[in-house]
Amino acid sequence: MTVPQSMRTIHYLNGWHKRYAEAGLRVIGVHIPMSEATTSDAVVEAAVQRLGIEYPVINDPDGELHAFYGAEGFPTRYLWNGDFRLVDLQVGEGNYAVTELMIQDMLGVDREPMEPLRPEDAQGAFVEPPSETVEGAWCGPYRAGGVWITAAGNGTVTSDGREFQVTSPCALELRTHDRSTEDTIEIVAGDGVEVVATVFTPGVVDAPTTNLN
Image 1: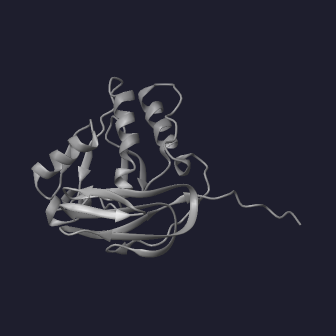
Image 2: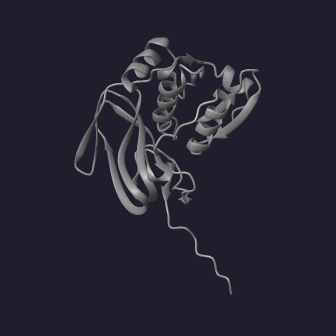
């Protein structure tokens, strides 16, 4: 199963691959299956093509690399230099501009980092933790910057009067907000579809005020 937090980093990994491959950067992704349905090479290859991933992706069906490197979450980014020394480790989303500046420093490249794709991706943004991930299709209140589901099967999922097509194991973004928002949602899985989990992603909040008294 595809983890939404990992999917949200693909934009930056693809961008760094395009921007710095000629300068020597090698971006390599590792797929750790979250369910039996996503262990095969054929499923991973189809997902890579569907998501427009342009860098190599290793299928690690038994999670051996995940265990070997002691990854503590999804996604985890490792940045090594030309001497195979670990320069930076990022668990979870964020710090994209910082990582890109480190890449430039190692490669001797100087340019403006990529523009943030979402408000919460901006360096220095104040981000509020979202509601906890819940198993299955959630119906009720939440606080988040966005709502995703992980699903499998063949059919449709309905939310807010919109139908989302599921044809393979996938992660789908049902809602997105410009900032952390309190709201309610109803998610209904149609015949032939299993909603494995409802995942809430973080959103930005106003900077806290400092009381100097």
